[in-house]
Length: 315
Length: 179
Image (tube, rainbow over all chains, first blue to last red; front, top):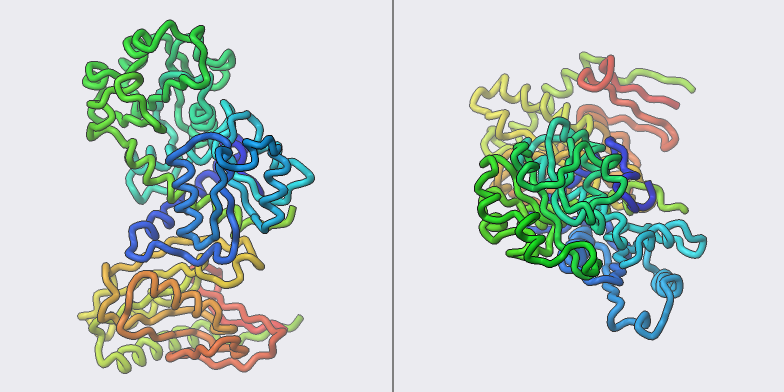
């Protein structure tokens, strides 16, 4: 594995290897000195063509904890606003000695384009491309689920775990990556959302599809993962209005109270409180949303370490 | 390709018993001793040394005095020789303060693994002293590092290879030199 582009590229072996390496990285993050020399002298660029808080910061912190040099590129304030192309941007960074690119882009396939291009030698990590994939988020979520349901020391897969993903599946790269990775790990993944926001291939992707949230929640899932309502990727044809969406598909306090006390509530962030998730649910003891962020740093350290220090760096 | 056995199973057992006595002697007892093996075979040797100490000094608490220290992420050859797998580090005590740490490895060669181990150890805290115990010292150091406790000094040529086999990981127990 030279790049990390899609959760569907990860075998069960490499998935478990990354998750278990993440546990070692978590151990480092709990020490007084949160630093490893593993990537000393290596250069990583965070190439963000789209806004991000947790993914960008967690990749930056992860690279710094491994002693790599990090530069942050955001499309706003760069020559992209003067019309510079993706190719020229990458060539510019590589000419300055960047070895790895963490790429977030609004177009699906942007990371693959760089990874497969003859003009780029860099190791590419997909940090979210359009509505396609966000593999490190799925790894983070898988680690969070495993730690909460199976304990901190568990090194195994997620066989038998039942997960419900709710909301705008169609536009969600988080959902796509999670479906791929969680099923690779042996979990049962079900989807719930309005018909207009479910992919046409939903039946192929998931173990079950629900068109009513209350029916779905009555099935007693181990994990309920709420997705963000992506207003920026939508026009009004998908749902009549936000209030109706919230009433039909939001994890309201009432719906949250109906869950088993062992059901985990997840959200990849950023949350629209009061729209897809109520504050009571988001701030409850069953919510592991903050752990998802905490695990994000360890998982990204593991991915950077695996790609830059463990895999051969020849293209 | 010629191979000769330089230590057999019993030689290895005797070396472990002797090293365990030397460790206790130089520490003037078993107090504040922490024995950390470097994966893979260093961990097995550390466990055996601890068991041998406990046999002669029943007050020695093997559960809280033995651990393992993975050094992979502290190596200086990560970019030139990728592919090293990381294993779990487990240090049984919360603090290294006042501890005399004995690092254990199977073969001492260039000294680079030990250098990485010293860095890894310092990232966990500041022990009172660090000692080094190895089953075999084969020479050819590339760094100013020496072992405090040595099972056997084996003068070798650079091109020779040393294989340490222990019952925990291999089907026999011996130290073999291959030309």
